Amino acid sequence: MKIAIISDLHDNLVNLEKFLAWAKANNIEELFVLGDLCAAATLKRVLAPGFIGHIHIVFGNVCDRENELAVAKTFPHVTHSGDLAELIIDNKKIALTHYPQKAKELATTEKNDFVFYGHTHKPWIEQIGSTTLANPGTLAGMFSKATFAVWDTTTGKLELKILELL
Image (tube, rainbow, N blue to C red; front, side):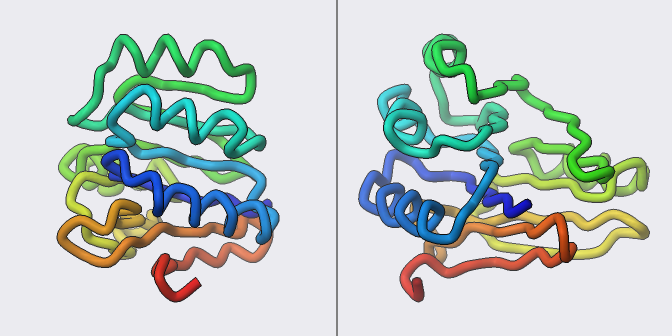
């Protein structure tokens, strides 16, 4: 299965459209959203007629929590887990959070195979013991180039993508 991981879109709809087109063309089956999409209208654009595969969302620090939850609940292919998601996909334990400190804490326990986080806008992948800790960067392109990550659960390959190079 191919999963795309995005964070920190900050209402950049131009980059969102480019990402959604790439995801469709590249058979992305699931999407992890690590917070800071921002406006509820942006979340609606991701969901309809945007990405049709299953979407896992966690809160960011810049969001309207009540409206984000209300929008997410209207789509059956969305799971909104609040501040932390803990998943098992293809026998791998995964944690999703927006916050780097929480992500590092989760990674150091080595209870997860992968921990994904956002917030810093800096794309990053590192190994902490048996856990891969990764930040897809910022899809908005704020403070660094617009980036996202793709994880192929079949091959185990996790890679960062620069949006302008697609």
